[in-house]
Length: 595
Image 1: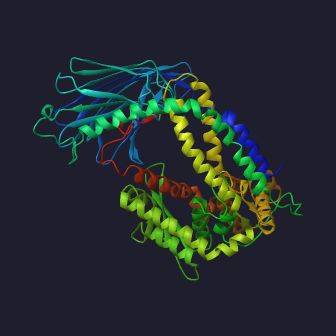
Image 2 (image 1 turned 60 degrees about the horizontal axis):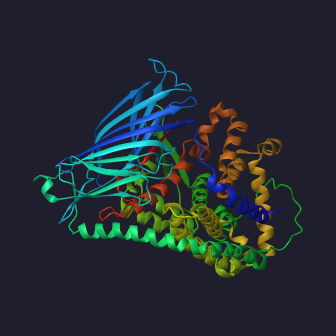
């Protein structure tokens, strides 16, 4: 069975199983109960008190609580307490959120984690600034009393929100399909839920008359627009939309099932590739001397079309420049256990345009002659910096394609007609799946279970058409098929530690070249581990510090590049906080887990 047939088999099997597989945590635990108490003050500040019960069915080292922070928001005066275990905690701020990491111990000396069967209650209390919004006509609190980023479902929830006065306010509980019940009692909004499933949330939204605020509202977010009618309209529109989708959902089920046959038709019409005479089992050397970005572009993969570069191409090019001595690697102690990684530009002589452009992107984050990844992370939390970074990366990818894979060259390797049809189907499928998914998941109606299965089925098929290898619809030419087969066999060799051990590279330089290409192919971890054990004896050989490329990977440089893309994406997504929030767009929420 070739790669294409395997991909099709995975698609069909995933249709029935992937949606029902629960996320697997490294720690087996549950959250039976949570109590949340929120006090809204007349200066715009809110105080949040949380009690969260944990039951551990396996040993564990701790829990964590992630609190998303929108622009201008902050957590102040944090207090942490734990019943049922000794504890320490630390606060980590990253990627627009604050993580409260609580270490749990069975002994007073704090040397051993907690055993299986332990029940722990965690208490958190903190002030939350700039959550309340004050418009020209009304104030607003939009807050997730339970967020959608928790690893596990919640057994039951009690929450209360206390407002400055006893006057009954206009409020809503989101999402509209939530089974949480709310009532107004003596100036308090009391919320109860018999359970919140993993990936769901409970959000309270209330309009607060301006008269309930004091003269000084320093801790509120001020927005110069009227909002009350817009918020009411938004909430009413949500209710009307749910009713409409409930009606439409029962009609479209059979249509969606029938449409799922279209990808198979596209494959059999346009996607079957030519056969080659290549019989190799493995390639023990890189099949060509092409730049790693070129190899990355021509390989297919999930979520990647043939001909497109992804982040691995960017990473591999950086590592190739390190290997060739164009970039140097430096580090300094950050804490007792961690180091900060830097790059230095040694030379740009003889570089291609795409290599010079990559260095120019990195030099944006240069301090005192060194490219600092920690400085990069800080910069990318600013919207204009994140957008500029993403734009320059996109231009870098496009310029590489223009220079190395113009249309006439690309057509020598790949026929993309069928992949275009597959993409058009995928877009249409996603649009319809959103409608059906909203009905089957968010609205209770007769036959909802069947509609849920149809929605999941169609969403997976549509998503697969967009993210499976573009060769499912299109196909490699004979030249392209031979090219990718050889590189796939080399990738197979790199992934098999026993083969590398049996046929190891003959020098450090060749090992480094393997690590560069492995990065482009997405199997760098395997080569790094083999290199660490085979060349440097599990790091017992101190000579590893003289190899800049190995040190870059060892110090986490590979992960720093990944984090830069993640930070930029998160910043851009959160850039529009200064607006009326949509359904589910409230502050707070977040999630947590155990470790």
